[in-house]
Each structure stands twice: as C-alpha cells, then as structure tokens.
Image 1: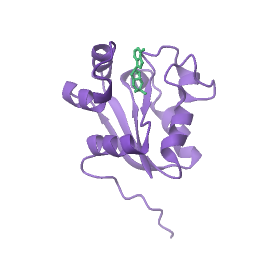
Image 2 (image 1 turned 120 degrees about the horizontal axis):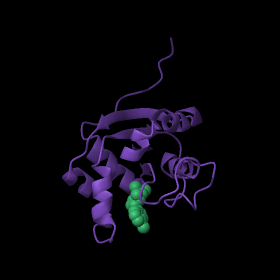
Image 3 (image 1 turned 90 degrees about the horizontal axis):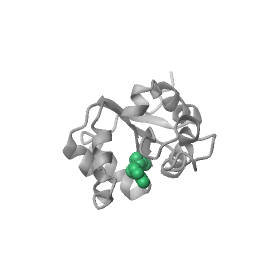
Image 4 (image 1 turned 180 degrees about the vertical axis):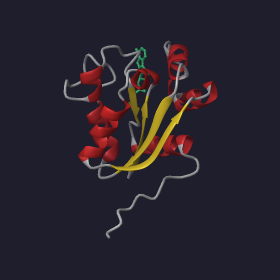
Length: 142
Ligand code: CMP
C-alpha cells in the first residue's frame, strides 16, 4: 500500500522538509518517490478537484502554487491511515500536539502538509504526482 504526501510551500520555506521526512521514515515507511517542484495552477486544481466548490478554493490554489513543494510517495502497512495520524487534523488547532500539524502550525490555511485521505485518493494522487511510476526501493541484503 502507498500514499502521497506533499510538503506545502510554507513547510518548505520554513525549513521543515527534513523533520517532516524524518517522522515518516523513522516510523518505518519506505520512500518510493521524492520530488521538489513548482506546481502549475492546472496541476494544483487537479490535485484539489474535489474542493473546487469551496469558498477557499481560489486561495488554496494560490497558496499551493506560491512556491516549491515536496511530493513524497510512501509505502508500508496501513500507510494511508497512519500518515494521516502522523500529519494530524486539517485544522492545526485541533491537531494532536504530537502530530506534524499539531507541532508546527496554527492556521488551517497554512497547514504545511497534505496526505491522501483514502486509499482511492492515494491511488489518484500518486498517479498525478508520479505518472512515471514509483521507485523500486526493496531492501537489498548484502
Ligand atoms: P489538505 O489536507 O491539503 O486538504 C485540503 C486543504 O484545504 C487543507 O489541507 C487546507 O490546506 C485547505 N483548507 C481546508 N479547509 C480550509 C479552510 N476552512 N480555509 C482555508 N483552507 C482550508
């Protein structure tokens, strides 16, 4: 099972890429994809297509396209559900203080990270962010 995580522009700008990655990798999840990129408006709109009717949609697209993001593909047991727990609630003020959002942010409109919410959405988001497929990262025993 795999999921898609994105460190948003504010997470990148605030120097949080390394501590965020560390949370997932030290838990035991396997890195299957990692990209540092600027996303187009079209790409951001496709990623958040389900939210297109929300009043905050325009601001969300501006936010996600305001600077580079880090897209991450992670694999491992129950990774969709577990990554969401590690990330914490969408509203950082409601997030468990031990979660990434609970530790690092206070504003729902600047919540530093995204994680796929269902297995179905994870598949769609992995296909959008990693159309070339994931990297084979099977441990090799020497
Ligand atoms: P994310 O987990 O990426 O999924 C949808 C995003 O929409 C969410 O994190 C927030 O960045 C954003 N979002 C959700 N609700 C609001 C809101 N009420 N105001 C502004 N942004 C929001």
